[in-house]
Image (cartoon, rainbow over all chains, first blue to last red; front, side, top):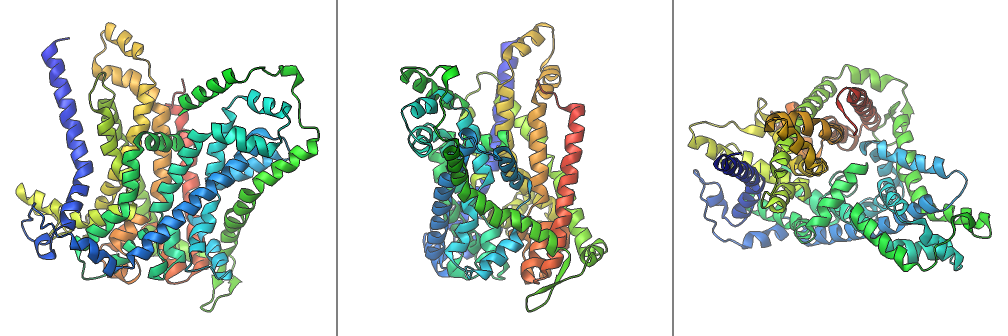
Length: 275
Length: 325
């Protein structure tokens, strides 16, 4: 194995990876540069690569859309769905993993069957329910169906199954009931699993478009995803402001990803590997 | 992740003083109490899934045999929707687009394998940095991604056409041009999922023992032969998994089409729209724009059949090429 050839191979590897990485990151850089240009400079041919540092584009987003409301809606929807799923899914997952009751296998099978159905099949009746309850154009509509997740139950059940049985048996001998064991023994041990489910729920809720788009049509009740998407039909498109808005909307999750990178990648890879 | 769990479990196991003898496992005094707790704990999710997911699926199936009046209410029309659907150009076109999108989207898999293989080279520096950069589009809001690409694809001021002009090529209007719109969308789809696929493949490759390669190298196998004889067969479960997910995901494509192609009036004004409309977008249009919910339900039932068929074919074919170690 000749050394220069090896080094050559290594350089080629890095060049290929760098080109790939540039294609991945380039669009975001261009988005950022455009977000700081005047409309005149953004639509110049050939394009300029030096921005005008026009930060007011970011303030303009709040005039184009009820952006403050939409941020709040997105935050509340994401927080409520995540908290709800962590609680409800872990309860069910613990029961399926550790408690014995008639029909357990059948019930778990029914839960799993929800996982196999493509989401568009739920949407018309879900919408009808929201309409019947008078929940359209409300935070409630954004939150409620997302509180329940067959996937979350499945993921956490796998986790609980991996914990040693001696633990809850010891706690049983000490006289602890199922609720105590769930809350004080199992949950603290399942932190990595809860973290994975939490990350995935935050990511999916924050980025969700289909459901928010359907139930909340009043701009003040929209989420960021739906609000931004509502701009797509407009004829006069102010691209710098659009780029600023889409950057602001996606930034929280990107920051979260940067901070918790390892957990993110593991969590998302896990979601697939076991699904 | 598994490592973390095992670690935590080990800590706890050593912390528990007296292990319970396996034979004398005690249950709660009342079996009935245990069962009651079981039902109680699964109740919230169970009821939620029943009301918002299971019952809706059945209802959608029922709706597909009904026609909805302009002022609400619906009546049974038997197979009418399915008959209309089978002869509806819009439905057939969207089905064709969706299948084309799905098949072309699979081209992202070899690309991801290539990058994963490069990242898997021994003693390569910066692996986690590369992985993070490739993963960025996976976590970015799809609406934002679609906005950015719409701007990049812009026929007059887009960066892509500017770069092409540097090498003397006059670029088309990409997503507004019927000849290129579908391919432009496929490219964004591949770009978005590449990082996810790389992570899965890289994990699969890292699980292959290095000794296999060392033994092959001693036998005189070159890098390419090693890749074909060792990496690909041992990676086949991951390849299968990613292709199943990719097909299921592509068949339900909506966000990109909605933001890049338009909806309602703006979609009808876009000359390239018939070339990119997907089944789920058509479903959305029928169910919530023209309020033709019975017909929309039939469309989405057709999609279900398509998804089940393609997934079943994949599972059937896997026996020929997937090796489970």
